[in-house]
Amino acid sequence: MRRLKEEMKTHITDEKAEKLLRELISTPSPSGRENEIAEIIAEELESRGLETERMRVPGCGSFNLLCRIGDGGETLILNSHMDTVPPHEMEHPYEVRIENGVLYGRGACDAKGGLAAMILAAEELADVEAENMLLLTFVVDEENQGMGTITLLLRGVRGDAAIVCEPTDLKLCTAQ
Image 1 (cartoon, helix red, strand yellow):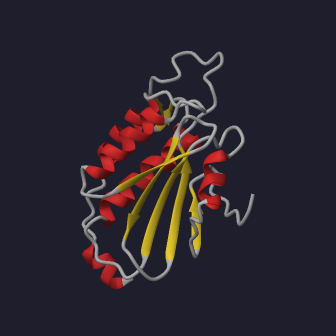
Image 2 (spheres, helix red, strand yellow):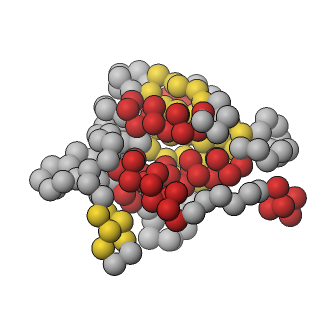
Image 3 (tube, one colour):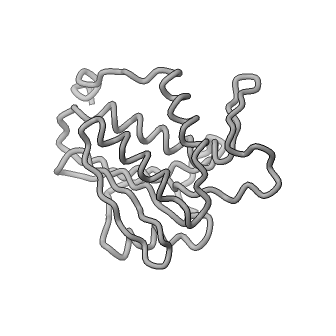
């Protein structure tokens, strides 16, 4: 762990995180329409030299996005979903506003904040030589039937441990 800390270059700033989160929130991604945000995420990761994989999800018209960092040992999965619930009656759902230091917009908490955290973590780890693998899984259809995650499992995507970037009010959840 010490070696990992020594190799990491902390380039994550509040401004960078906010800019990325603003872009994600301003991109509508209700269930079934996640491809645009998936491409934004892919471009962000690929611009840092990371390879991505698009995995079609049957019956959804959208695709999961995977990104692997490292190539051996144990696998830690970071997972979040790209879809949001529809805006319904929400006024200006894709406009970001900040009130008392809290950022608001459709999906800010569930789960575009988690997406931004995953992207920034991947960028930070992109050049670190690790003996294990970090697998980022950006899935579709979580707000409906969970077909994105089901597709991952049916295609044999597995890890030794996983962190799911769902809002839990900072409470540890070992299952859902």
